[in-house]
Image (tube, rainbow, N blue to C red):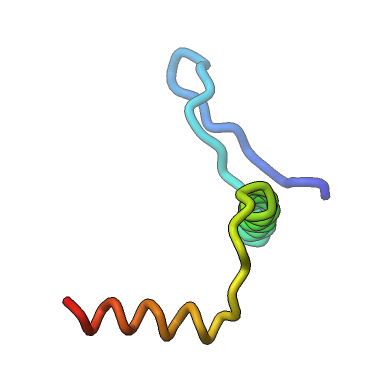
Length: 68
């Protein structure tokens, strides 16, 4: 991916920000989300916890919520 960007500088010439097209920003955010998904998947696999079906998890959460 080639990003189109403009570096914003203050009056002393220090880099203070970046301007980029929204399409590039969205692509970067998607990559971060994908990386977070991989990290979360790896953490879940390493936790040793037993996986349960999604519906069962929802039912357990709702049951605990109703007990409050």
